[in-house]
Length: 204
Image (cartoon, rainbow, N blue to C red; front, side, top):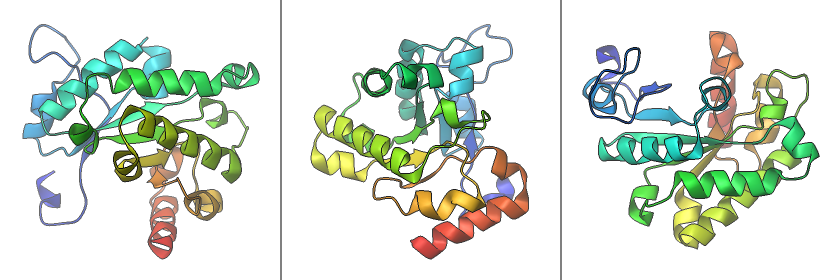
């Protein structure tokens, strides 16, 4: 991490536990992340929800703890293919973002980032169109406005986390309410990742 101190690159973590201390083998605390130089931390990633049974309540506890340690929580929300087919995806995402931000003031909310993960479009062969991404991002922005106000909702960054890659990054990042990407598989290739960064810079 210290190699990045004088650069514009910021460091994030994929997970942490919301308790300050205790016997939680395998977990890391928010305090340790902050002291290590982290700026961001993922909260509620779809894989954490699926494989580790993280609930909306757990996500909220993590958001609260991250903010208390001056870490910006990247709040991940999104629906599965089954939930989308059942046409409950908007209700689900609304419930997720409302629960995650429970008790969070508008001032603290400005230090959060929201990442929309269409789980149905991650590693399934399915692809979300730019229009589908924009539709959900706009909905999330509207939900944030309901929770807080228009100014706060406009200021919170909403990232797209559904298999963004060089081939679709420009179209996705050109959408009005897509503020960036939560890059997964494409980040494993330096060439692909830097290409996405270049596309984002061209659009900024």
